Image 1 (cartoon, chains in turn orange, brown):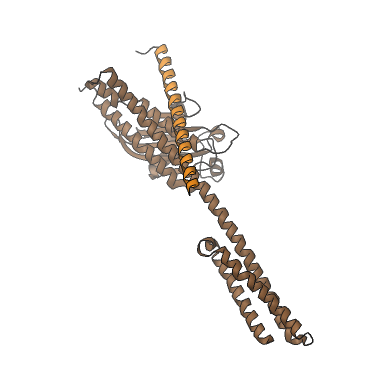
Image 2: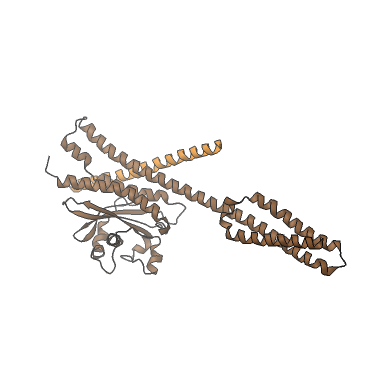
Length: 47
Length: 336
């Protein structure tokens, strides 16, 4: 039987995991976008 | 001499008029099939020749006005036609350049959208991998049946998928909006004749749950239909992705109905996609659907349908895999 405290902790952990995932996705995609744009710019300069 | 000049200028006039008609018909293809440089090389000499022809005829025999007036009229007309032709060619070339620029911007933003999609998917796989890694680490590389079951068990993953769906769409929102953009993704499974929400995620509210809205508007989720059905039941009954770019406008047209008045303030665009059939933990096949809504108007547009469906299919296959794993593990509960 889960106590109210257990449920509160589980909810907090769930929120923390969601926030971490959102942050990870954003950071990773922004990094990819920057790297790909830089690559495109380099190719453009070569042409 | 005047007559030869008249014939030549008239021929120039006719060619110019034909040119005008061709420019009108092929204006969209000008940049691709015809070089703007050559148009100047043709039209400028034609303008000069038209003027020379009319002026030359007048100066040749100024006293015989009846003889040269036709040359002057045709010459001026030819000059006007070739000048107009040149202006139109320049205009449509510039139009073509503007069009290409817009396409370039469009393709850049589409490219970014695919990177958001791949990036979100990769992070979800990483999420699952870290779960498996944790289980393997704790069993020191010798997994027991219990730890394998724990690895396969879904829970956080489904939450993660819906969080990633919202984060993916947030990444696609461009420009400034008066309100912070929000997306909510809800996964529905048919149960007892109703499309029942089993998981939901709201980007701006980590504690949001879809069940209160479902309970308050229970009748709208019945698959047998009602007066004001929820979009999820419509998409299942029609077995088609249904979207409304602007729910307020669609509501004014009578094509979309809000379940309650409050929705008008936060539900501005919505998409509902049937995901096919999945196994439920009670060993029954059920219809499954994903619904995403947002407070950003004009987001889920019909004109973007192929792209929106493509993205939802990517998420759908992974969501279905998790649902099947959950069904398999729960129905096999108690077995080793």
